[in-house]
Length: 355
Ligand SMILES: *Cc1c(COP(=O)(O)O)cnc(C)c1O
Image (cartoon, rainbow, N blue to C red; front, side):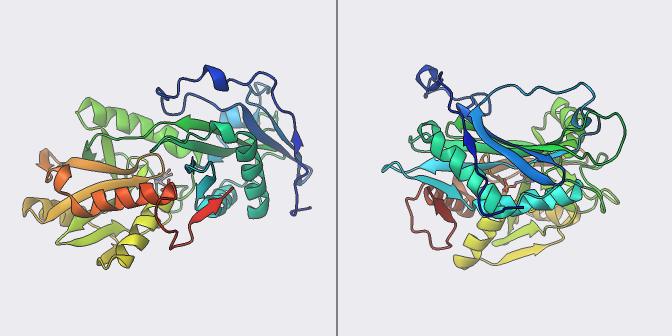
């Protein structure tokens, strides 16, 4: 297999949608750029690398992905500087995690250089889709699906690797009230929680809907065995500031290793904060809230970067947290990361890839 170059065939669309986009109204994940990257896996190798018009896929109703969910995805962002340069934030980390998911889902890897070539080529062709407005960005969705038209459970022999992109507006997430979930589970030890596997998200919808019916925007997932340890908040990693220290559950096979959380932790250490990455018990969190020692709680993920948590509910009691405006660390790190991603501060961690 040639991993040096993909020999991508480029078929540019002759009907660009660019002129029809209302750049002041970009609902998240509903507006798609002109092109997509598609590549097929067959006979043990990747072939037919192509950039073409963003368009529907054609497949047999028997296609494996439609029945058994052999699929996983990534989510990442690019932004544009005032000089028109495109900046990607730690894209190789997404490429590596893509392959961690691939292995767990019994699917073929896409070597990191191949992934990067596909990504850069697509972004280059759709440069004009990367918004330049402050806070705006291009959301990038790479994913893989099992393509065998076969109604039997086994790993597929054929796959598609696709990347498409969406221009998105500044994502401001209202502070959310969350509930510590002590019945349903998102992930179990030995399961697929550390992979961005489609089924993980399908399985989280019902518990999340139940939580919403009780008035909580999101769930804080706990370990599936005892429901005694904090794992994640919705589809974000979760961090707390208690007694001035930053405390966050360490990555494990039930917790997705988020790139945003990793970046927040690295920045915090650089800024001189004490950071504890370890098991975090529900009891510890509840006691800290009762005693007023928890000053901040927030989710971390690519879409929102930081999503503030305004209140946490546990077994019949809702604990309100201090006002968001006064949260020193999370506001500062959000501001810094947003500036970092758009190239407004020095790239001191070497996280930016330019195009
Ligand atoms: C994607 C994701 C995250 C956040 O990862 P980032 O790399 O920061 O975007 C956290 N938890 C889950 C379950 C996720 O799917």
